[in-house]
Image (cartoon, rainbow, N blue to C red):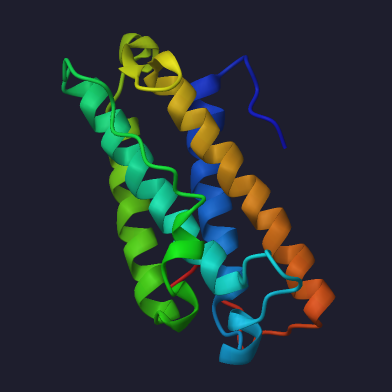
Length: 171
């Protein structure tokens, strides 16, 4: 799914909500062995994907908040793709990861629901990418969640994973 140009705010908010809910419900109820298993060397486990999603949400929220608050310094930037390799995310508690992710996603959507079209276009300087708008960060976050939803579903299928319970909404 790609975010539509006709209503970028509406589609982005919809994608953020739905992809976040879907990704987290996919992981909820899976056994620990499945959550920790890496399909191949260098790949992430499902639990590492959950931690990565939390890290991405945290960074994007900090960046978008800085833009809204008109912070006049470069936006925060971290290479979150390195964190799963640097930290032992497979030993983290999944419920804690999901809880942290959910709280951050709620803050993100609350922040974005309170923005206007001019806020959406407001820019700040990213240390590596240059000028970037709040709406661009939001769309990229939504697209990122959709990509990892697809990745998680493919991994579950490849691992033959079946959750013990499926919830309509994530915990």
